[in-house]
Image (tube, rainbow, N blue to C red; front, side, top):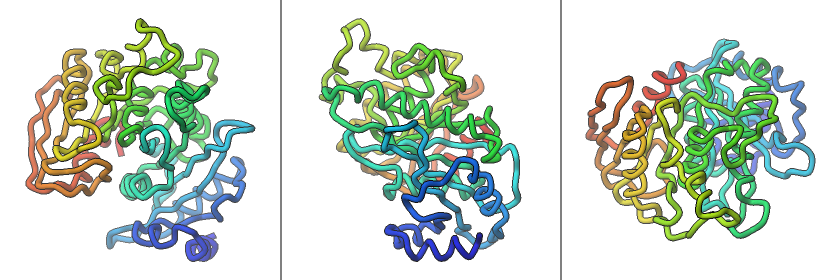
Length: 332
């Protein structure tokens, strides 16, 4: 299996980016990988030597169907190298792109997924239905698709070596909004919820990277097809309560796409609702960064485990802070 992995890297369309991120494809892109064979791929990845000199490699299975017949959207699976474990925590990552574009394999998605996977997490990077808010079939199907990525991960936890009770959701920009909706709104009765679903879409932690949280503030108006009374159901700042999972917000002061005031408002809403949260502001960071943003350093605030959070770094890198948050919420 290891020989096949190396051969497929060279054939990949994204070979340059994959090589930079030390991602090794385990099958040809677009190949139909049967769910029954995933455990074999997982065992091959876990059986690969875990290099002690960073960056260690991660292994990816691309374009796996998870939404049923007739749906073109797929997901990518990232496996860490090292010993096989039956209880690894996992993260579902949701790409951005203004709800109308973007892809699960874009550089930011792959970079964040690889960093988390390299730390020992199994990662799912998913696509979802794209389109403007006035296009029928887009809202709240996009939220439902992301919930179903969590459901799929939980349904196949045994094959993947994942602990079904230790799943986080993360996303950037539009994906940050979707991650918040998956994590904070009810997976049965909320937008895109499914009261008849066999598996839960609930998560144990949320990472919101400069997400859109209020469409009226963002200048994009309301979500169509809903009455004024229903609008609050689509706004994460009105969905949080003390029973929700902990939230990590990451935002840069130089973001000219999503005003940092939106994350300020989200942080205030989490505090008021007594939802545990941490808010990291990266000085000078623009929009659309991964865990290695440009900037001058960061400051962290919030309330976690009933105690005020306050810390800072003179370096902008967010890897250690993000992994620390995940270790405290879903383990490692």
